[in-house]
Amino acid sequence: MTNPARPRSPARPMSGPEREAATASALVAEAKAGDQRAFEALVRRYRKRIFALALHITGSSSEADDIAQEVFLKAYRALAEFEGRSQFFTWVYRMTVNRSLNSRRDRARRGEDTLDDPRLELAVAVDARSNPSREAELRQTYSRLLRALDSLPIDMRTTVILVSLQGMSHGEAAVIQKVSDGTIAWRMHEARRRLHEAMAPEKLVRPRALSAELARLLTDAGLPILHLKPSN
Image (cartoon, rainbow, N blue to C red; front, side, top):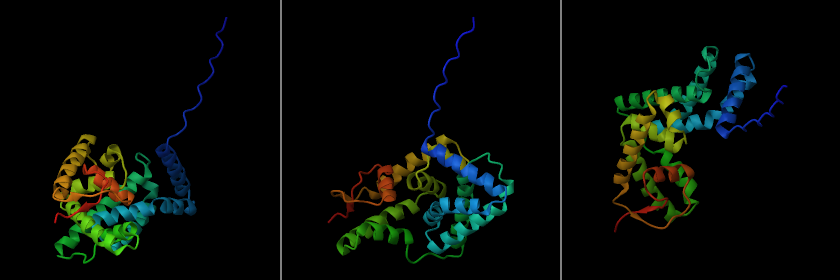
């Protein structure tokens, strides 16, 4: 007597990251087969994040824009060699990190620096909401925070950018930086300590709305999501 077949369990719905990876994989396959529109869809999907990553590392809007274009051009030319062992975004993120770090080092060797930090200008523009007094407060706070971020060792700063500002998991950041998950965890722990120390002399006042990126960075520094006000 045969046992009746057990009903199959319904398939587990894919998570957001799994759907994202599946969509990107399908677009990569179509692009490799010669569909240029599929690659253009990949560019539209990731360009803003690639630009933001390059901007955070280089501190230059023009360099970040150039790097984003270079990265996607390089990816397009090397697409046939992409074997899919890692996700597409991991591949282009790694290229972006390497290119951005090289650009920053080249500028440092030439003794060049940007006069205005576009990261500061963008953050203030988003959060000040055309309020001059609020803009002055935010400019001082964010300037301090960005100086503290930029003072971190380059590999640690890149980890903070990937995890806190780009929202990556420790595992994803580890793949991009070619280190262990434990190294990423240590860098984040040490970065929180250093950022907290850098901001500690400030007094805390009640919260107002922060941009998502800066709110996440303050949280990761071990600080409440509050604006910081200099001591009198």
